[in-house]
Image (tube, rainbow, N blue to C red):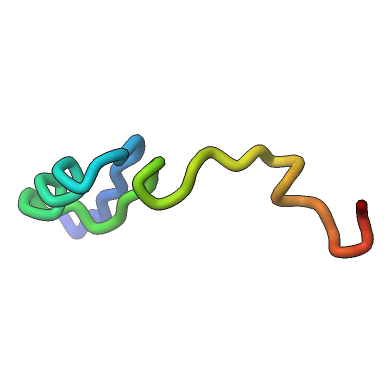
Length: 48
């Protein structure tokens, strides 16, 4: 099986290291960025 694995809720370096050791390909979570609400992502430069 040629699978790509993504882990969510990675909030510590210890968790990221363990996931890396067991073959996880990608990570997301508070370790990389706090939660961003959809409204903030969709604001254009012209909106105040």
